Image (tube, rainbow, N blue to C red):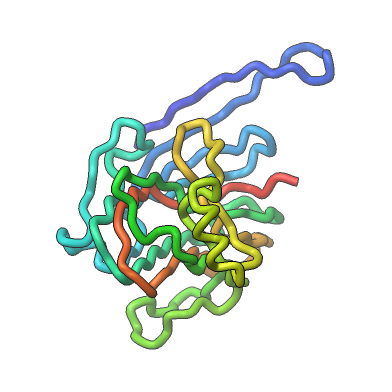
Length: 224
């Protein structure tokens, strides 16, 4: 496990400077850190730990080394009709009494195709002991589905005009400091006494698509 400690000086209302301790640890396909605003736990789940439909088939997905990725490699989509990305994390790993948001962290290649079509994103919980491989049990037990488009809104205004029936659509945040895009998948309140796993989903199955680079899924406290 690699651990990095970063000291950041901040000024609070003109008083003496304080030292804020930010701890970053990498282990087993996760990056653990403390939110610098609240001090609560954050996690980034590597692409290799996500359940990606056809993710082990080289004709559809491959692993790509990227210097700008926080992990050694990202998952690169070549072509699929069925895009399904699922991440899981045990809630006991998170800070109690905290509302979390989950984000898909990704980039689009120059040859992106089909990702301007609405996808379904969702965050919810499952009880321990659930068999994720059992056919027919695809839906998570709780959570609200949202519609999302992985391509930034500024790039598809004409496409949206042709699909005016789409009302509340989520678009990616383009303002991450690391240059990656992030799509909000949903939120979940962690009470601290749950015996469940948090599951995060992005799914679109209506047409062919390509040109997606997935770094992972980030889970961090919701800022009020």
